[in-house]
Image (tube, rainbow, N blue to C red; front, side, top):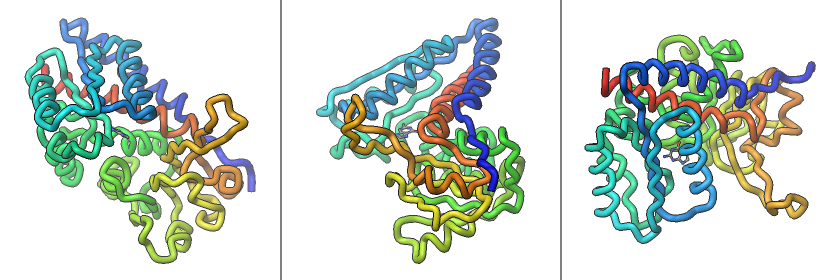
Length: 295
Ligand code: GUN
């Protein structure tokens, strides 16, 4: 087979961000500045990195950024109060609480407290329902939205395609499945959701014209689980120990890239695939929230 197309998430994210910049300029000309608040409880290194990347991107685009890094001991009530204050802050149009919070926090209750109009993660039950109802006024979770944008950007036919979503998380798997089975461009697919309890998992993933791997296990998808000519979207961002690296680890996806890529029509690399899209779609959701709230 010929070499696969490498789906470039960095380049695609740049086009999404350029669209955001144009919309931000338009809002500012009307005296409105979009604002995003990112809240982190505790100091998990990966979460700290993501939260800081999100704030930095806001600053780069001219989005008003509120970054709250709260101690791990923050109580449920204190966090609810933080959310209420942000709900009532007119300079903030988007609110995101980095997941996962520490174990003593009831995450579902925190998400439910966020004003759905400011829920740029798309995790609030109102926005989950809007995705299922195909109501475009809702917010689609950033990572699935980014995966879909990669498919449309690269002209990958989704209509009638067998899409297998590997993973059933609230953040990626479930919303991804809803997006791909919806009516419309970049969707209209026949969707199967597979996960760690699926029987004969490789036989299921091997049916995929488009395989979206979001199971959170390093290099889990091997060549035997992929059809010849498939399109593979790798959502995984996993740290694996590697003494040869300065940091002592390297980042790998959920797909064993070296053995899977030669079978593919197209595949996302890790890093540089889905990762940059998540943050770009967050910026796009923040602009959308601002427009809906102020418009
Ligand atoms: N943790 C991993 N991905 C995400 C995300 O998209 N949003 C939030 N809030 N937390 C995450």
